[in-house]
Image (cartoon, rainbow, N blue to C red; front, side, top):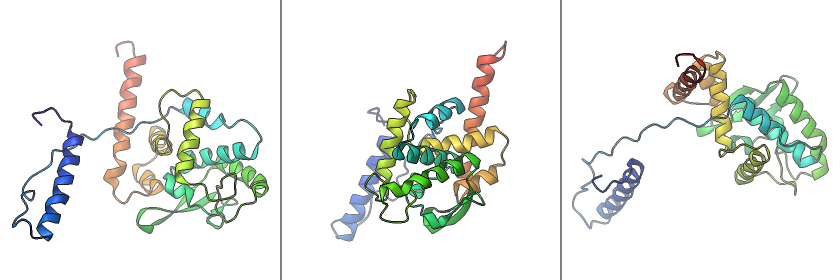
Length: 232
């Protein structure tokens, strides 16, 4: 700490030391673990980055052609923003888990916990359009989103595609799937959604995890007040 290392760096170093001394203790190279009574500094809780509604609209419009992969990308973006799914959850969605007639999708989250999430009209329309051209790619399984070779679209491919689409949309700040998840939660709360409903939609086991989005909304309200109020 005296050397000026950041809190995150100190926490990582302490984690490495803890693992090392646990190994040394198991191997009987030391008699006691010197890390047991050492507390790590608290990491400052950073607010998640979000997109503005206008940036989201630009991103959703970025896949602007009728080519199959652009139709897929539009459906992918609409689904992410409509559901707030994690990228790993999105990559693992299969066709039997969707019910477009009812407008819902069954998502398997962390710890194998399942939740039913509404898709919304725009996402349903985008997915329906994608399904009408998906067969042209000759998919090799029931994955909803597949690559140009018909295989399951990986998390890494989804990340890379969203980055490319954000650049195409002219969004200056970095955009990744989790930022769409943050935007989903924040925009819901900005428009009056109940915190516990957002918790269920996100698949958070603990309400305290969801509460960080209330701070984001509060920060946005303060910024709006500062920028637009005559005495802000």
